[in-house]
Image (cartoon, rainbow, N blue to C red; front, side):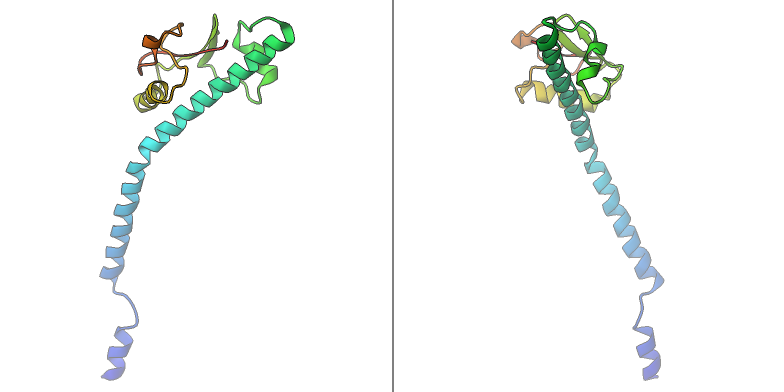
Length: 143
């Protein structure tokens, strides 16, 4: 009888294992929900970083040719990667077409523009009241 009791107490029951698996699943689900905002902020940071790199490339184009670039393809020799199709140069601004971008990413860009002090605008102006407002395209001045 003592041998049987010792034998039973060595392992976990199926119910105990299932409960542990369910708890781990719930915790993993909660982690996935909480990382959604971080993903949007990371993508917004990538967009701003790409725009800064393009601005630096535009300054190098100006230093080499004494003329500001008028097309995004003129930056190719100064960048490691070609800019995506969502980026353009419009007059003195680098424009990111954010119309099809997720709203959470736009909200993160707005936060960066208003509280982060970044030069991000909703149109081709550097007026303080034209800071990016999470609608439409995003503009960063080249000069």
